[in-house]
Length: 72
Image (cartoon, rainbow, N blue to C red; front, top):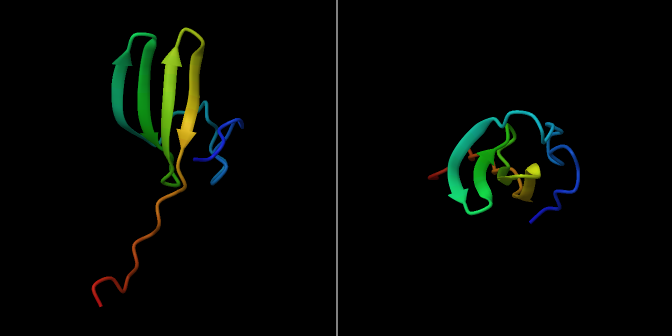
C-alpha cells in the first residue's frame, strides 16, 4: 500500500479532493461509508466518508497497461 498523507495522487498528481475518475462501489458503515474509486491513472483508492469528511485510506499503484503482444 502507498501512503495517502498527501493531497494528490502520487502517481499522476490528480487532487484527492476532486471527483474520482470512476466510482467502483459504495458501502454503508456504522460510521458513514466507504467508497472504492479509480483514479484516471488507474490507481484503486479506498475513501472513507464520515463526520470528519472524506479521506483516502488506501491506494494501489496504477494498473499495468496491457501488452500488445499478449497471447504470443
